[in-house]
Image (cartoon, rainbow, N blue to C red; front, side, top):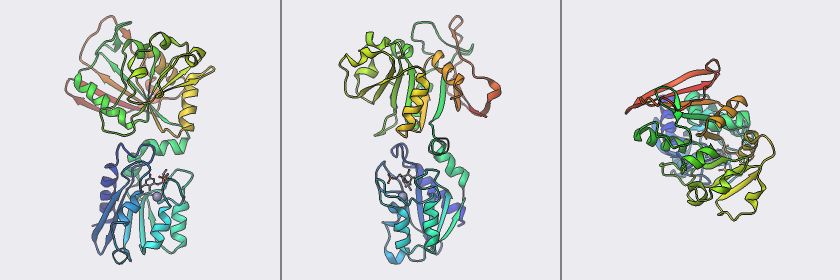
Length: 347
Ligand code: AOF
Ligand code: ZN
């Protein structure tokens, strides 16, 4: 088999970690000797051993001697929640390391590769690099641009409307609804405006089986939720909820521990981005409200737009917000059971 084929195996293994590696990247590793795969490992769970250790620990010193390691991300060279993989590789007797992509995280960024080379290990970089970058798209974006990737989602009727004013409107069907619930697990935070939180009363959960549900963020500048303290995101305790508000009265009411108040002063969009960046949360799914979406577009903070289109005609509903078509490039579309999804990326 070729280097590409072994790397393909490592990429497949890496994907198994989703969505439980959470803020950590998906990483896979394969050990090969004499054209035989000796071990396949991956990063299973946030805080647990890295992919390299998962693969190497399956083998004896004798098996590892003179072998080749294929790994989808540059091995780390720091002590975090785990010890450095570079030291483990150096001590293992592995003679060649093939890496798909360099780690953009400044804590690693080339240092892992340097360490291996300094110890006489042959290192090759860039095998299936594009596929590896795609696998950790949000991670790569975050550590390159120092802010989370933002996706704006809308569900529209065939006549480009968001729903009827002041009432919950089911635009797309159950299949689309299920799809959104799965999609949420790809993000580390989900955001809606207070109007959506009150009128739709969504739970904003994901159906994916994860230990790290996305943080639910509600923008509530004036403190309208104070009159609606029984809504799901303030009572169910099923995921953390953050409220960004200018209203001090939130600090006077008793809220459950999973609800956190972020006091803002002025631009709440920038406050959300700043807080997520500080917490190293790498992606945000914006789900609700025409005004909220427009604020993100105006701030130039919409990296991707996802549109769910149903075949229904609403007639006299709220017109959907529109991104500037010149700023966005068609990315993909999918036709499913009675609805269509189209994705566009900022150019
Ligand atoms: C992973 N899994 O398989 C590899 C990672 O806090 P730590 O010790 O878990 O370190 C996390 C960093 O380690 C991560 O951001 C990335 O730079 C590097 N490599 N991380 O979680 C892995 N190989
Ligand atoms: Zn590591």
